[in-house]
Length: 353
Image 1 (cartoon, rainbow, N blue to C red):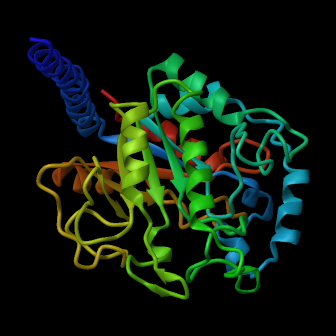
Image 2 (cartoon, one colour):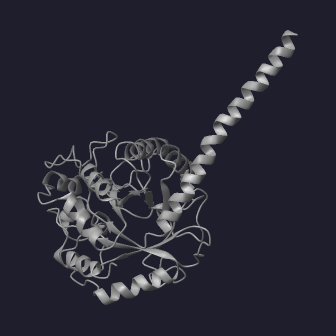
Image 3 (cartoon, one colour):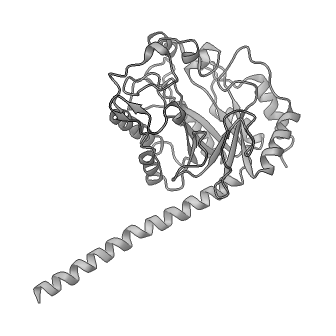
């Protein structure tokens, strides 16, 4: 009698557990599918590449391209004071252009965090005299104006010693004996948790940098593995409707990804050189990212902006493939969007119906 009762009680507990855990999973799937469909209809987004590299005025890869030692590169943080940054002005200009979302570089390959991260002191709040959480101001402005906020997050870090450098980064700043991917993974998880906990609803996390290492690369201590599924699971656990994009240039999306992105290419083409062999997903939303001029980060010498006719033509081609266009702007070190970028946004606004 006692054993029979215990047996029935155990079955009851198991059934309750299965019911409890199956409901959120179903709800999560529905939220994610709805978020995908909403994103699919956006049409246009604005990419923002901005960090302390803007002070150098030569794009976001200058640390690697000029082989700058991190002890010298990081001095830029003490001079970063974007006194003319106005989140509301940014968002209103972008919204008027017809864009439905902004993708902001929360942390690029140089490892500098553009928010008040507790995982490192190398941040806009702790390492600069500006000491303001730019991401918080941008997130508040986006939520106020009804613009989706996506966050670019680099998987590469040229600053931290626990990240094992791949082919990118300054040649003299590689510390293989200090690399510790478990430590680096804990760091990334802490940062992603902050981004998805402290800044309201986030439309997507946009990863970049998997091309720095290949899965299965032979290392001294075994094979390289990104363990990217751990990050994907964390994101969907923290915000079930948050989409995941990864600019890895692989043939097909990986399990857990919600957007297939194409760098400088219309889906199905390979003019930019990053889409060789890539198949176009038939189930996921598509996105093409491209620059307004030739640079992602601010470049003082790059004045070769596209014409409004060229942008309209690109938008048409991308839309015909059922994709969104993510058009990039590199803000100036003082926090303003370049005049030519603002001019293009204004011309784009005239085409908004």
